[in-house]
Amino acid sequence: MMDLFYDQFSSTSRFTPTGSRHLPTEWTNDTRRSLRNTDLLPDDLDPPIKLLFIVLYLFIIVLALTGNLAVLVVVATYRKMRTVTNTFVVSLAVSDTLIAGLNMPVQLAYYVRNEWTMGEPFCKFSKYVQGVVIVSSILTLTGIAVDR
Image (spheres, rainbow, N blue to C red):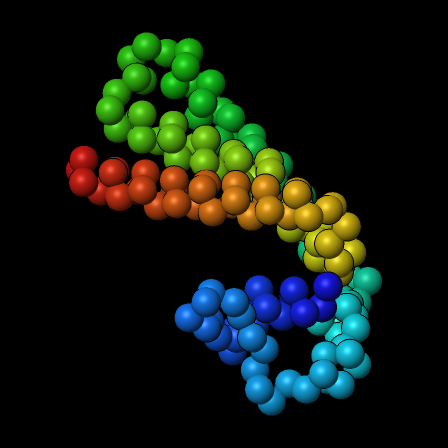
C-alpha cells in the first residue's frame, strides 16, 4: 500500500516508456519498509487550534450557505432578476454553495482527525467535485468579465 502511495503522489517519481512508475533511486527497500502512515501525515494540531479551525470553518460554511441560498431564492422568486448577468451570479452561487456544503465539511473532518477515514471512493469523489466546482467558479467569473 505504501508503494502505491509513493507511486501516485511522489513528485520525484518518473514514468518509464511502458507507463509504469518507479520510486526515486535514492529510496531503498529499507527506507520504504521503515515508513509508516504516521510518517506521511503532518503533525496533529493542538486542541485550541483544532477548536479555532472548527469555529471558523462552521462560521464560513453557515455564512456561505445562507448568502448563496438567499441569492438563489431571490433570483428564482422575482422575474425581473432573471437577466444574463444574474444567470452568471446564480452559477457562481451554486458553485460556492457546493464548495461550502460538500467540500468544506470534508476538509474540516480531515484536518480535525488528521487522517482520511471516509474510504477511497469518497476520497476520489470529493476531490473530483472540488475540482469541477472550482473550475466552474473560474469559468463563471471569466464569463462575467467577458459579459461586462
